[in-house]
Length: 249
Image (cartoon, rainbow, N blue to C red):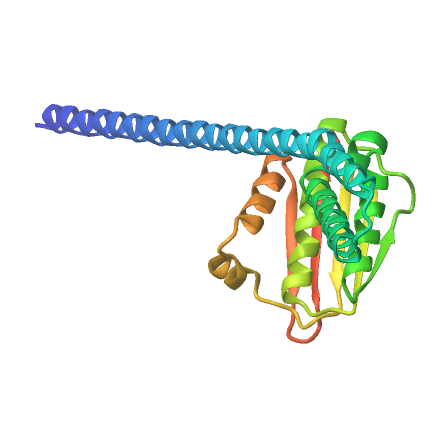
């Protein structure tokens, strides 16, 4: 009788061990599958963003290298027409001004698609130019702080620029701020970006839900792609702050 009980107990122990092994196998499989899924998602996001940037670069180059010179040539030809009639002269003058406006708008579109300064002179100069452009078109003072020239991998600079660009656009859209402070530093092997405004603040989660565009989603995707971390703080009538940390390597 004792022997039968002993065999029964051994069988239960063996069964429990087998069940435990099966459970561990399923848990490990699920974790492994989840990690592969996250990796594939990051690769998909990276591919989509890379494709988007390549398309932006192509369109920006077409505007700058093809359409720009063509419009300038049209303007030159129009202005070279010898006109004696006062009414026709006014029409030509108005057409020339419209072409100037189109060229200016086209340059702004080309810049928004891909700042030439970023390719020529790097992230620091591109951000300085961007801040100058923002201040010229909006009633907001932007204070840009570089304690020293930051260095970041060339192929990643466009993503850092887009992240800062999206942060500023969110401030312009939601904050009604008078001052905006941007600090970019290197510390402990990380690129640290702080964007702070003195506006009315806003609910980031609510903005994500209400946003019809892909700006915030793109921002988060780029940060995830660069293995970065983003913290956000906002209080009613006390502004908002973004704190971004990106590994340099």
